[in-house]
Length: 89
Image (tube, rainbow, N blue to C red; front, side, top):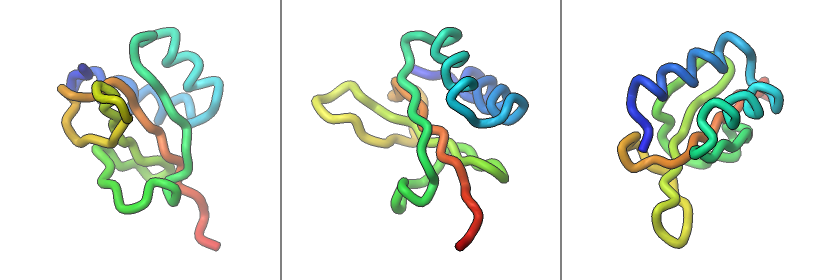
């Protein structure tokens, strides 16, 4: 379970530190029970982000069943996907 405040905190941290593998590693130390994924936003298909920034979007993952799936409900989330928004080709 992820609270709205925790989600706001990690998004603010990533916004300030910049999205990188090092930033994700720090989050893993801070919230070790969560799963983190660093992806590109165009790989997220038609999923709806729970937070949007200029340089990345945030998605939540529910891994309580056999297969992980995206969710928009923080109370059911066990992980966060930070999806980098790239330049248009």
